[in-house]
Image (tube, rainbow, N blue to C red; front, side):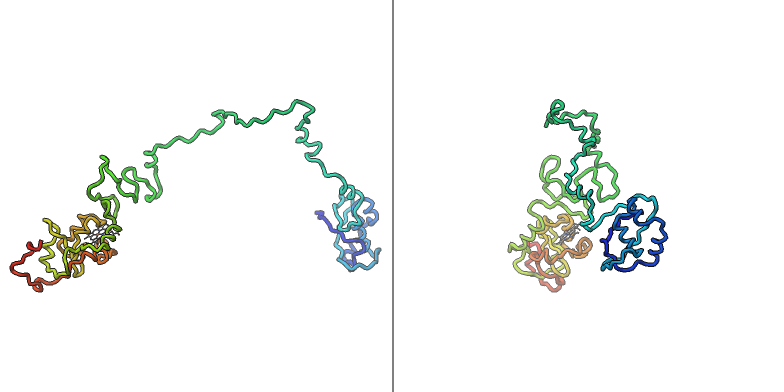
Length: 317
Ligand code: HEM
């Protein structure tokens, strides 16, 4: 209700006060001099109001006067002046007085601190932390057994930890319960039916073998393969395993231990056209890249290959 008022300097008012302001000031029964004496207004206020009433007619180049409500018997309005000349004597005393002591003389903080001369010195703080009573702390949560952790219900299947077997996306352990290394590829319990390949038969190992320059096809030059020849080379009885794919014949024998789907799966395509099986399982795999060095030849009709009378397929082994 009573804002702080920045009072202009005496004599700084130039614009005549509005009619409303004049009539309001004039209707006030209390004179300006009386109000000043009561402390209701500051001398600066009085100057403004005297100017408004036409008492002070000195021209002033600055701001317009602000309306100042005056209420009889109202508490004094706190105000301050930007004019250093109008600083009261009290303010001067405040400026030169020493800063207030802290804590305050009559504060509880000061009262609680006894001067050293008044009594024995306070005990020195010890660095050792006194042992806390057990009852002071909250009891730790009970430990949950590992087996119970696995059985905790989860909201999503992807976060569930299987209660048995290896963790998801992890291969089988390097050794079985007897501590023996697996001698044959073991099927992992994943949906892709991938197997754990024996050491030295990773995809990278196969890539290196393809680049090694070794003859992986088993033939010295590309040959024309008849359906009978393909059927005969089915990987049994020591014969190589051939498989055709889109009219080309590959020797899949060296790739058998490298096949991520397992040797048995790959053998299903031996001695025949493996294109259908291949495309059913992994159409994204690039057969020609994977087995490029294993290329034996191309498929031809039986009639296109004239096998010499003295030479049979058995002789080729
Ligand atoms: C002879 C040519 C073949 C090659 C070069 C070959 C290559 C591959 C490769 C690279 C993978 C890993 C795929 C991946 O990680 O995404 C794979 C996986 C697999 N292959 Fe073959 N494969 C061949 C034939 C076959 C055949 C004929 C079968 C089935 C009769 C088969 C069954 C599988 C299975 C079950 C997997 C594991 C599951 C999967 O990866 O989807 N593969 N094979």
